[in-house]
Picture 1 (cartoon, rainbow, N blue to C red):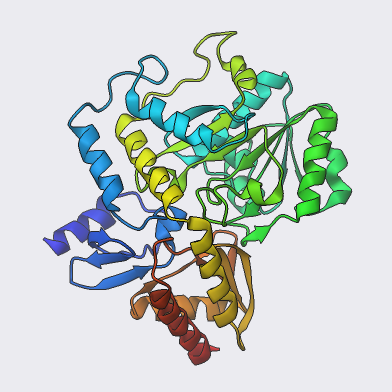
Picture 2 (cartoon, rainbow, N blue to C red; picture 1 turned 120 degrees about the vertical axis):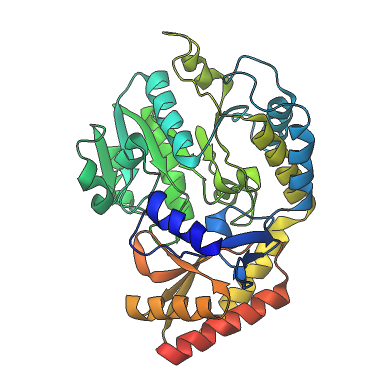
Length: 396
């Protein structure tokens, strides 16, 4: 059976690279993945910043089971009053500033960014978009158009016109944001670009420039959201509130879920000229909303900011030595910068052999991604960091 499944995977499932990890997952629980051949792996990347409560958290599983007994899909988005949607929308917006009082549910992060770009254009009546070099916003055409890496963009040109890229953390180029700009889209901490945090004063300058020109500010918090960086959302640390907030990944507790959040005033643009000008069939699926509600309730109750601070403190204290250049990021969204790509690959492979799943970011092959589940026991994380250090020592 195992060989049959592997054969089906490699022959019939579309591949995204020539070398997928190829783990045959039997089940997952807490911080661990278990394979069909009996191996156990500590997931230190949380399925790429998704499983902040670990895998199959009891509260999330129970919410899914309860909703399964009520109903699944009943109608396309926005027509029927569905309890899981409405309850989760209220819980989510209750945690946000007053200007972010309305939420549009979608299925993924790239869909959230697509919707945000459309909303900004429709509200402002403008077409120009400003984005940042080394950013990543997704792989659909609109999101790819504002992703700042030519290696991913070039095969699909032409993309959206009138997109202008400027340098992250550079005040000198903010004049590119002008009265023709519909929106500026950015990650408060660039994830796939190498876990690069925005400078606080620079981010405030971006906000002011948007205010001065009438451009909307879109924060892509798809990876930084839901306590990954300390606060519920990274913008809270910076004291800068976006006009549109994009969410996904850890939102659904392991279920596919995304959203973009804005003000009731800005969302008026989606109602008219014409009505139904932005719709989705499965966005806000009741099972996903039930899971997301349980996920957020649990995160709010567990003092997640304290746990992310512990994770960050331990990483900065332990992950030092020859071959290690830097630990950067915030909270539990960390990047371990090694001296070169060769060492990085060997360390990731060595840790994999020893039962620890690590990875690197899309735009950097010398940076190890560290994003553990927020439920991880600190003593387990300490042992994992020691294995990483030993691997660096062995291969440096």
